[in-house]
Structures are given as C-alpha cells and as structure tokens.
Image (cartoon, rainbow, N blue to C red; front, side, top):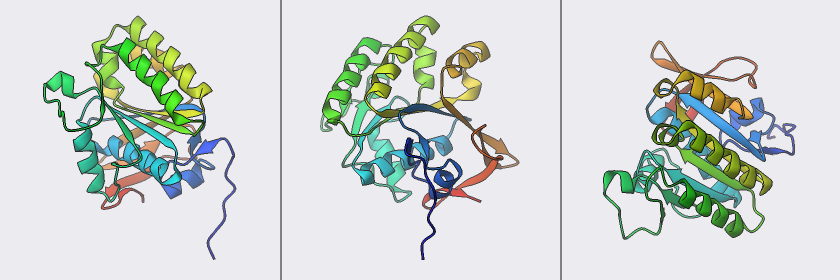
Length: 229
C-alpha cells in the first residue's frame, strides 16, 4: 500500500518526491523560490524537475532561458528522462546574446537580458494565456539579469513582475550562481524572496541547504535526475 503524506494546500510539487515530503508538499504557491549554487548543470536539474512536474499536472509552464538555448534545455533534460518539449513555453533570452537564433522554433524571443520592458510584456501574456491555471515560471538563470542590468532597474523589474505573477497564482523558480555577484546586491535581492535553497559542493558531493529543511540534505544527480541520498 502506498504511503500517504499530509501535504499543505498552498504548495506546488518540486517534482522530487522525497523533497516534497520534507517540504510538506513542495514549494509555496504562490511564491518565489531561489536556488543558489555553483555554476554547472546541477542547479538546472532542479528546474527540469519543477518544469516536468508542471507539464504532467497540466500547469502553465514557462521556461525563461538566458544561459542556455531552449533546444539545449530540451536535450539535457531528455537525457535525464524528462521531456520538456510539449506543454511548455520557452522564452529565449539567450539566442540574441550569442547570435544563433533558430527561426524554426516557436519560442518567444527576447532581445537580450537588458530588454526588461519586453520581458514584462511577455509576463503579462503568460498570465493572460494561463487561463487561471497554476503558473510555473522558471528563470534559468536570474544571474544573467543581475549581471547585465543596474541594481535599481533589475530590483524594480523583479518586484513588479513578481507581484503580477504571484497575484496570478504563480510560483517563480530562480537559479542564481552565488559566487558571481556582489554580496551586498545578492543579499538585497534575497531579502525579498520567500524561499531560499542553496546547493553546496562538499568533498566532491552536494548538499541542499535551507532554513525550510530539517538538516542539510545530501543529493546527487543520477540517471533520472536529482536523487536524495
């Protein structure tokens, strides 16, 4: 008989069963979640799980790619058994930066990470298109926006779109490279975030840390994605 767990109503699944149990159902919904950590694919796998679970549940899933082409996201997630192709809308903020726009794709294109007004309009479209569904809005990664924009403009931008998305029953999931940013700027930004997790590298392994978890959680990336060990 399958075990039953008491999950809170204002939660949205992380896509990782063991983590859902520890968080009493997942991340907050509506809410904002940051995953800090070193550069690498490991943080992105948490985003893959979150997006894949949303597709399975019929949520409105938006994946803003600013560090990787959407087709690379599809390829890397597929290698872990998660198909992020149908039931998801990509917002491509990377092609303009590297000059390799793929005209054959039907992604929403943004002209680089400084085009904050354009991205704000895309967020409005996402809310309108969602039709009342839960929204999962992923920033892979938000570090790009912190690097390319002034502190005042990026903080104001995020405050505005976060308010709109949360009012529309969205959970925002943001990846941030911790060592890439000025500590004061990062702390100022994180001060407004509801849930912060950190992926720490320790002796060749990884631990997930958060005040929301009972203790640091050892994790690894296996053939099907994140594994709690």
